[in-house]
Length: 245
Image 1 (tube, rainbow, N blue to C red):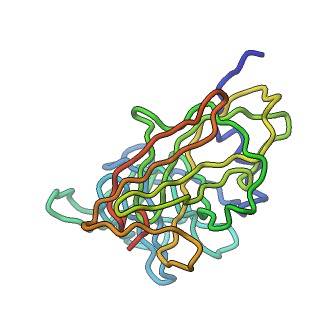
Image 2: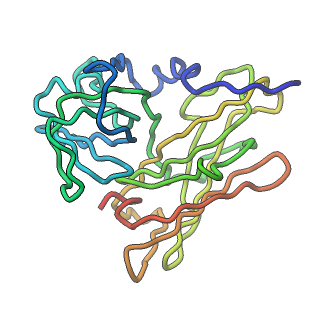
Image 3: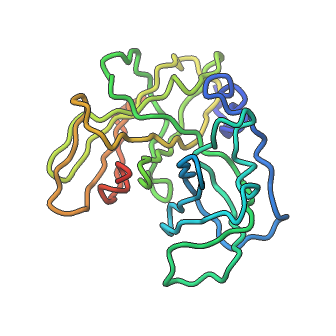
């Protein structure tokens, strides 16, 4: 059967009931913006801000309305990950790390969930089509490992709970992880390409493996089951990038 590509946005509605996101991601401030990047919402309950994946900049809204498009409709908090255009309220100066922003343009939400520490509960590992390579390699920032992949989709649409990532082992400076898919796709009719942000806990509860690097640089390796062979990719990052501290 011929495979076709399907963007995650087509399946996003199926995830709403699972992950509780019902806010419309409206664009703000028209179509102009100063910076485009993936961001994490840091919400301390008082003054939420954005932290950029690529720049590492902290973006502080000038008022509470700036991040309204990322807020849950029930008022309980914010969607944590998104690709946005940022409208600065001040000049972009490379020597600075913190900026005031007057608005954001939301291009797309990024689906996220916690990395599992209970891999023994995962069953029925089904194959992926591809796992982040080339310009689509994984990256880590603000405590999230972002993993691009393509996977066959069966007639029974998957939800977020069907995708998991867990740590298998860790050496001095390397973390070994596996991406797992539990939905039977032996009769898949299309291919979905997307990225999920997996949040890593900064606390060792005795069940996870943690590296002990001599400096702040680590390698994160990701594997997944493929149709004919094991798939693999990797990224280099700081300990803080992966664990958020």
